[in-house]
Image 1 (tube, rainbow, N blue to C red):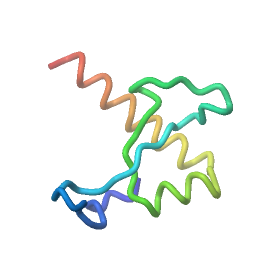
Image 2: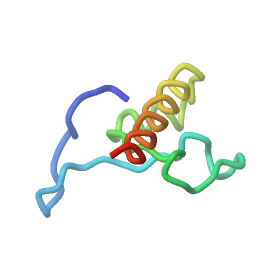
Image 3: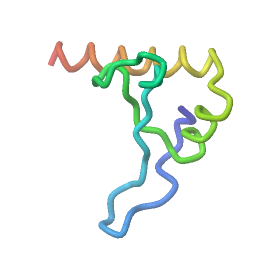
Image 4: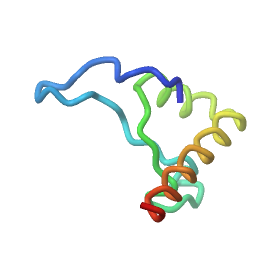
Length: 73
């Protein structure tokens, strides 16, 4: 969401990001690729604390473009 690289790498050398459901599972969101994004820990915390509509829309747009590109390639 912030377009920055992962803030650190794990012990295995993999960039650390957290999985986030755009529409929360507890609110009826589906556990599927188009409802999931990888966020840095700060953006993930922001979503769970503020859950701003503008951020939700941005993430939905990112997820839709990603899913669409998966089917074209």
